[in-house]
Image (cartoon, rainbow, N blue to C red):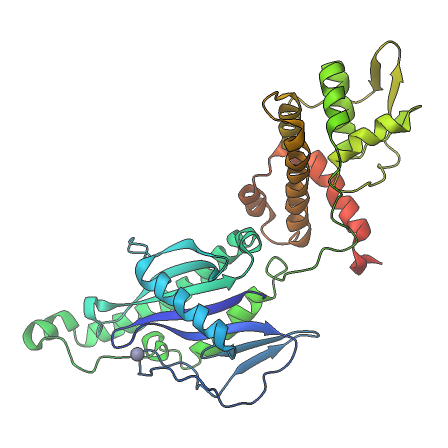
Amino acid sequence: MDGILALCHFCETHGPCVISCTQRSKEEPVQTPHSLTVPWCEACQSIDLSQALLSRDSKTCYITTRIPQQQDLAFLLKQAAIRSLSCEEETSKDGGTLYFGDNERGHVISHTFILRDSLARGFHRKYSILMLMRDKIHLLNSWPMLVSHMHELVKELQMQADAVNNAEQSQMPQRVVRQSQGTPRNNARSLSQLTGQPAVFGHIHLWFTWMLSCETIVEKPIFGLPMPDLQSLLSLRELALNWDVEAFRIVCFCVVTGIPIVSESTEIVEVFQVLLPTKWPPLQNTNKCILTNHNGWIAEWSGELPTKLPTLLSIVEKALKNEHLPDSALTPYINGVVLRWFHIVQSLYWSKNSNNNQLMQALGVQSHDMPLINYWSYRLSQNDPKKE
Ligand SMILES: [Zn+2]
């Protein structure tokens, strides 16, 4: 499932409810009467149940409806709305962003906010924007992009509601009216009325469409690279324990950053290649590392090892030398670490045009990881079918 974005509201009559949601689809929605009934009042009104707002690019439709066409999705979204507006509530006055979820109910990033309304209980109404996805890692990778755009949309809605509110207050201050008459009975107002924008749901549809079309949100299949074999790391452990530390580090660093290794023994070079997700060829036109054996292996390389090695290598070296980590656990452990860095590089590769620094921070990438990231991204770009 691609992500689905929703606007939710805490209705004073109906409680937490979804008032509009946008999702991607390959086809236009079919015109079938909706079998679901949802409570309806002025406050939780948006677009009609039988209507849809639709935007389209060359391959994809972006559809906004009152609730999702798929009944199971409608149920999950309703649950998420309840959690975001009640149980998982952020208490700060400005609202807040949080993550919750599990594999059964889906994973959610929720941003709660309030809009001023002179007629509401407490003089404000509560809303939330949700992104619901099946894939937790994918959702969290999109966090920086999602949050910054949720904030921008909310800021705009709040400015509009403040303007309406200020105009009303200057005509008839509601605090004074309430003190003399009590809370008015029929005080439900729609988002269009609150913001003074009759087309506010069209506007939200465009925001959501734009967010769903961002590269980080679109789930893409892995291209060109098979899952790595569970390669045995036992020989690498042997080398780590018996080689000169400096020589071992140089060869590891060269392998993960694409520097070619020249050696009479191809077997030795292959042992180090377990540090790559797949057997990529090294870079060309760069200084080679020459590996020779004279009563012990020597690595000759004109480059210099950085003071801090890429995180992947620090983890690997520690694991190889950890005598409490048995051989049987070593292989899956290190293959897992390599895969994790492969996924990080993929996330960065897909999103290279948007908020890369924030994304790198969220993924835990530091400057000493860049030589590895650069080489792996380059190899990914060579495998990218879009570039053929
Ligand atoms: Zn309602």
